[in-house]
Length: 122
Image (cartoon, rainbow, N blue to C red):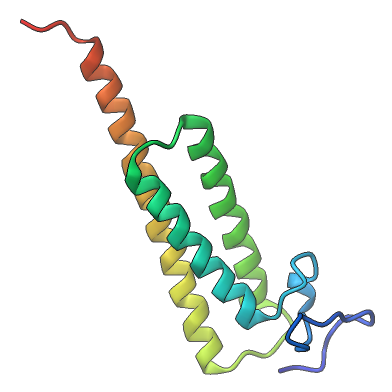
């Protein structure tokens, strides 16, 4: 890991320095990636149940965007990353993209189902 941390560098609960890009989360890269992967799994399960409302879908979409932005900051930030972290970051981007696709499919099903209900039966 790089020594180019902010002057007021904080430590993750595991005592590893937190990169500047993750100061608001107070997580090291490893724990940030693990947390994002876990949250994506939980959200995909929630979406798979099929009971997410449009406001909840919008909330999840916003979370995906903001998390992808944070992940981009980590990927191109000042901290030097090992090849293993680079690989995990790419995998986490893929996980976020898959979550976004699941969300879009769910929204399309909701829209299609809503339209079908409105059509008269012949």
